[in-house]
Image 1 (cartoon, rainbow, N blue to C red):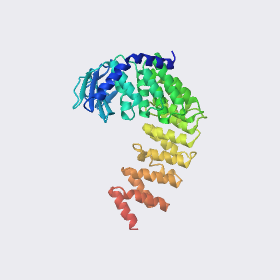
Image 2 (image 1 turned 135 degrees about the horizontal axis):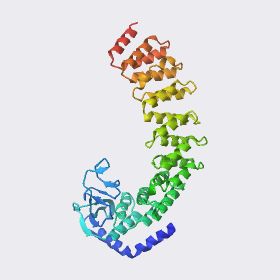
Image 3 (image 1 turned 45 degrees about the horizontal axis):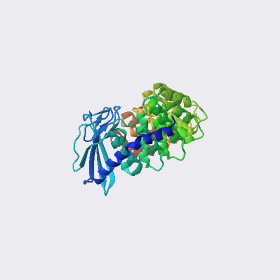
Image 4 (image 1 turned 45 degrees about the vertical axis):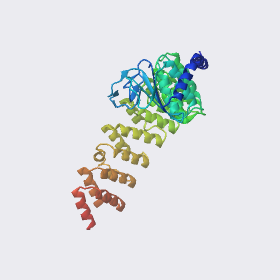
Amino acid sequence: MQLGALIVTGALVMSPRVGGAQSLASRIQSAASPRVQLEFPARAGVCGDGQSFLSAGGGSSYYGNVNIVNGIPTQECAPGPVRVVIDRADGVITDIETVAGPLHPADGATDLGTVTARDASDYFIALTRTTDGRASRQAILPAAIAEGVDVSPQLTAIARDQNRPLDTRRSALSWLARDGTDESSARTTQTTDLLLGIARDENETQGLRRQALNLLARVGHGTGIPALMQLASDNRDSWTAEQSMRALAQSDDPRAREFLRKQVRRSDLSDAILTAVIRGLGGSQATGQDIELLRSSFATVPSDRARTSIMEVIAQHGTAADTQWLLDIARDVQQSVDTRRRALDLVARSTNGATKALTLYDTMNDPTLKEALIRIYGQSSDRASVDKLISIAKTDSSYTLRRRAVASLSKTQDPRALQALQEITTR
């Protein structure tokens, strides 16, 4: 069945219940208090503390004020109905608070009691279509967690509607991707097609397109990965390709990782896309194999920007072997001075970087590289670095470099540095 047909079907299914939603809207509108509360049955998996937060199921989607420790809320998450508190000002809805679990009355609110899940869902879906501001986005949560109600056709329509607030559309997209958990389900296929369509639409905002690409990496246990790889391979739109690479980099799907490994070997990628590949390959999902691949690719990547990205990724990895590799780059006279200086700057951030760099100073001919080394020695408080600075300040043939060393010594509290400075100034 086509997506458009599903939307029409969803509208037809809702039509007999419009009266119920209108009746609920009338009750809310005519309530004496500007604050109104109501309850309705929650779908399976929804729990909360009844006062400040709820979980929409799946063990990771929490809404409200919740303290999370190691991925688990410290408050009890008990099953129970949904309670919604609606705040109004001059008849306009300004805030919608949704919790679940054991119910507690809201202070100063008109309590409408329990309503049907269908009436509640229809009412809140209507709000997302007619209300602007924060309430439009907030209305999606209670609509989506009502028992026995499938709002995916309505959320799809909202996500496509460019006349709706951007935050509301983003929330609709997130819910659709979150519910698309079955790799083989028709809903997951429809959601994947929706995300792909938005990602490709140049008339959409880049923020929404970027969100669609990121959600493609997570929907349906990898259903969106092939589409992302295709988008990343299409260089006709470099922005889409770059953002697709970034989305793939956040995935732990083996296909995504292998795709990135192949891309880093290509010579026809733009700087922006290749940089996205490098940073993705060396990101939070990086393995030792990935780091070694980046090291071995350093000599063949086509630009200084790509080489700098590799060095930065290696530096963030931060092992002793990584620091030594950067030092080897700094020693390599075949590299540009800028590349060698950047390697030294990255060494300075590593543990024991100054100690490992002590032997480099006397082998360097370029003054800018020697200045970089002086900065590294000055950032360290170890004895060997201070001794090296004293030696440079007293004996280097370059007046400029001697002054740099003196400036670094003056920032330390080492008694030997202070004594050396006195000796130098009294000459």
